[in-house]
Length: 245
Image 1 (cartoon, rainbow, N blue to C red):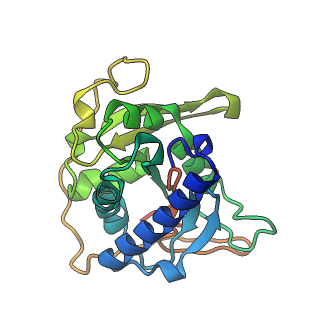
Image 2 (tube, rainbow, N blue to C red):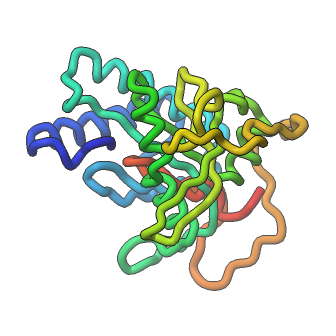
């Protein structure tokens, strides 16, 4: 959630209630079984690992616009300090579910860094009327957004998600529902995104089943495979598949 720590106790309580209610409504409407998600709560958001069989296309292209609509309804008439606005991040990767204090995974770390990146925070400031900013990893953009085009690829802005104090720097793509993030500056410094922003690859024919194919999977130790979509909603975020499709 944006600006969560600036709220007093009562506004934090109300924001948490709105957050969980809206996520429940959104996932129910999309047919996502939130009851099966592995969730690590964070007060101002959550990290969620989604089970095998979850549709990447639904998570990446339909969840953010729906949450934005529901938040718009919730925020109508509220003061600026009471509005709930979210950063949603999506990534994919191998996740261990048996950690003693969380979910050991480089992909989990990656997606949480995306959710906290200054570039996605700047996107919410840039589009003041929006209530959601989505940031996806480069692999998610190329595997889901470019191939299936449920959202227009050219409306994504290519950015560098950089957190120097965390020694993190990775390419990512930002989308703001109802806006064309790709038409303006790609980072908070006002510098244009690289020239290949919006670069497209030929559309791929979707598998008839609408599902996924996994190949050459090897695991050492406890692990899960499938669409381990992890969402971190201060930022949501997440390893989308435990194995590449």
